[in-house]
Amino acid sequence: MKVDPAEVTRVLRDWLGQQRWYAGKSREGRIEARLLATLTEVPHTVQIWIADVEYDDGSLEHYQVPLVLRDKPAENLDHVLVGSVVDADSGDPIELYDALHDKEVTGTWLRAVQTEARLDGVDFARSADPDEIPVHETSLALTSEQSNTSLVFGDVAIMKAFRRIEAGLNPDIEIHAELSRLGARHVARLLGHVTARIDDEPWSLAMVQEFMTTATDGWQLATASVRDLMAEADLHAEEAGGDFAAEAHRLGVSAAEVHADLAESFGTSALDATDLGDRAAAMTARLDSALAEVPSLAEVADGLRQAYADLATYGEPVLAQRVHGDLHLGQVLRTVHRWVFLDFEGEPAKSIAERRAQDSPIRDVAGMLRSFDYAARHQLIDVRATPQSEFRATEWADRNRSAFCAGYAEGGGLDPEEAAVLLRAFEADKAVYELVYEARNRPNWLPIPQASLQRLAQSA
Image (cartoon, rainbow, N blue to C red; front, side, top):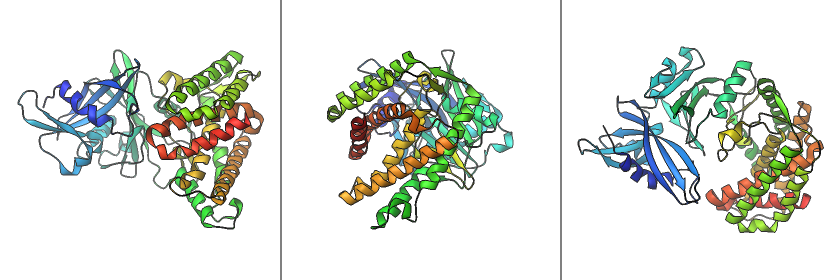
C-alpha cells in the first residue's frame, strides 16, 4: 500500500485537533504530514508518520502518529479512525487507524525491541534479557493518558509512545536508564526504547518498562481519602477513616530519596544570582503570556510578580540537579512495599533542553503540593460548594501538604519550610501553567488554580 502525504495531511488536519495530547488546540497553524518509517506490512501495513505543525506565531511542533493501513473498515477500530484515503498506485480505498490501538499490530514494537531491530531508520534498543520482553501478550491502551499514549502488555510491560517529539534523547528514557542501572528503589525498570535518526539527530519515539501490576495510582488514593472526609460531616481530616497524611509523609520521604538517586547519577550544581534572575524572568514571561489567554489573571498578577521578584533577589546559592520536572499525584504509584515514580520527561510544553537542565528540587516539591490542592478540590467542581466543603477541602490539602514536606525533609531533602521564597515562586509558576492548561482543555476546572493563585499572590 502507498498513500500520498497530501492525503494523510488532509485527514490529520481534522483528527489532530480532537486528540487530548495535541497541544495546539487554541492556536492557528499549518499541518503537514511526512512518512518517517514503515515498520511492517504483515498482517497490515504499519507506518510512523510525523505531523509537522507550524503555528501562525512562527513556532513549530512535531507529533508522532503511528498509522495502520487497512483495505477494509474495521468496526472494532471505529473509535480510532483517522480518515479514509486512496492507494496512490491502485486507487483502492484505504482506511487509516491509530496503530497504537490496533491489537493486531502493536506487537510489532515489542518484537522489534526484543531483537534490537533497525526498521527503516528506526532503532529498537533492549536493556533487559530477551525473555523479559512479553512479545506474546496482547496490548491494552490506557485511557488516562494526556500527553502520550501508553499500552500495557499483559501484566508484564508498559510501552509509552511519545506523541509530541523533538530532536534529542527524551529525559524519561535517559533518567530511567540511569536509575535502572543504579538499582534505584522508586522507579520501574527500563526494558527498552525506540529512537529514530532524523537529520543525524536522535528523536525518541517510545520506551518500554516493567509494569507495576498491583500498584495503585496516587491520585486515586488521594481522592478516595477526600471522598471519605467529605462523607463525614463532623470529623476533621485527621479523624476520617481514609486519612492520607501517613501516605503523604511516606511519599515525601520517597521523593527525597529519588532526588538523592538523581544527584548520584547526574551530579549537582548551584544556581547563582544570575541563574535565579533568569528563572524569575522566565516565570514573569510565562505570566505575561498567560495574561493574554486568561485576562482574569490580572487580578493577582502584581502579587505573583512580587513572588518572582523575591526569587530574583534571593541572595543565596541554590542546589541544582536533575529533577522530575512534572511531579504530581498522577505520576506516582503505591505498591505493597513502596512508592514508585513515573514519567520523568518533565512538562511536555518545554523543550528537551529545558527539561534536561538541572534545577532546584523544590520545583518538584511545588508540583506535588499543587497536586494536593487539585485532589482536595476537584470534587467541588461539578457541585455547589458550601463554606463547609471549602473548609474541609482546605483542611485536607493543608494537612497533606504539611505531611509531604515533613517527609521530604526527613528523607534528606531541603526542608521546604526553610525555602519559602523558592517554594512560593515555583508553586506560583506551576499554578499559572495549570491555569492556561485548564483554560484550553477543561474550563470547568479553572477554579482550582484560580483559588491557589489568590493565596500565592497574597502570601507574596
